[in-house]
Image (cartoon, rainbow, N blue to C red):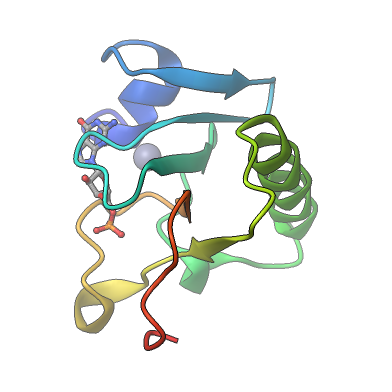
Length: 113
Ligand code: 5GP
Ligand code: ZN
């Protein structure tokens, strides 16, 4: 999608602090971190949110989760971490391109969830 922020970041058209990239996805540091480690993992293909995960792109999403585990290990998140994907307005999704937040490096609040 030509006017999608995360499509542009994934393509390298907008700079970001990338920590991982392969042919299917990339990961970069969130511009407004909410934890000592706050990384976003996105598919290079435009998918709007988890609501658009189908049999056709499920393998890509599975791949992204293997990448999440690798990044968490590389970032030294041995105490654990949280993976979040906001879907739609009620969840506060602000960028309409599927992304998984990796949050770690501190004890997360007991709520949510
Ligand atoms: P959402 O609110 O959709 O779940 O998450 C979007 C995330 O993208 C937010 O945490 C926000 O800080 C981050 N973000 C928004 N614009 C940019 C940007 O231009 N670069 C980076 N690295 N992160 C961004
Ligand atoms: Zn996009």
